[in-house]
Image 1 (cartoon, rainbow, N blue to C red):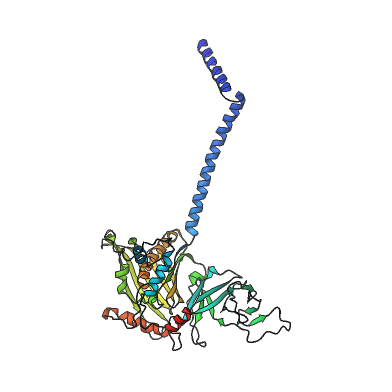
Image 2 (cartoon, rainbow, N blue to C red):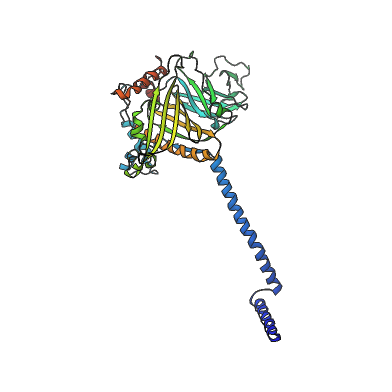
Length: 459
């Protein structure tokens, strides 16, 4: 045993001497370094996992709270068949020129309705106009300045200063309830459009004729609306406000936004054109939005089923509100029905739709606005609202994608179709005729004709 102990002591000393001479410094230094390494390593591992955990929590936070935005420009949808034939990619500079050439060659129709109907139209989304901010908006054949006071009130005026024509939406400054022209600092009241101050006027007198047109406006359901009517005396109808959105019970989950190359009447006409649902929206959404390929054989395992009806207002009901009832489901191998959604859509005037959805997991609402930017260019927005919960954080993002795919299929038709004033309809298309009769109330005898609006734009 003594011999064995001596041997162990000898080996330990030999190992210690080797450790000292094989490195830099003393044995004490090496021991301290070893201790520091063993001490730092668990902390670095903990830090790494902490960073990963924080990143994961932030990603979950974004997924739960961040709104989804699906946005497409005028040249993004519906022209791929032309671009593919010309072998023009997304980054090719010829893309816009090629699409615009196709738009010029398109036969739009012989007799189009007025491009700017009477009614409420969205000019901005509420979140896009901060307090004390002014923006220039071009729509409905008008150039407008939209501004919000520090108190939160929204005002809409004609954009051009009557002095020397500067656009108040480009550099105009909000001061109190007025907007100040960027050119010579004339101020105009948001209440009535009257000029209230000319800073360099020695007399201090403001001409009474120094006035801008004040447009009626309102803010509701996440949008800023303007009342457009060729008859200045026409009273606007009462606007439908959704209390669940206004009081915050339902939250905004996201939107899609498109520019569509068609007449405004074409977009809401889809509600009465029930036959197109099976043709355009029946094929599996997984097959994409390009209608050239949407009926791919591999996607036949699942098809969308639609049961729809459109109804004009009855006696005693508001004349400007039409209704559509829709039942949607997804059928797997034409047997198993899943994802059933009941929809009640209210077409409120020519450019606003409220789609009330009911699913097995709860309700939600989609708000659609259609605003004419040009006679044949419509800005269409869908905003999605639902109660705040984990299910909706997942489902609403899926719904935005699915609705966008389906809407883009319609866009491929709208971007190239001809407007036919007197279409060839069969018995099953009777709702289209009813729709057009109902929609005609939004045109007046003095409405700007399509030809006049187009000539003004060309000039």
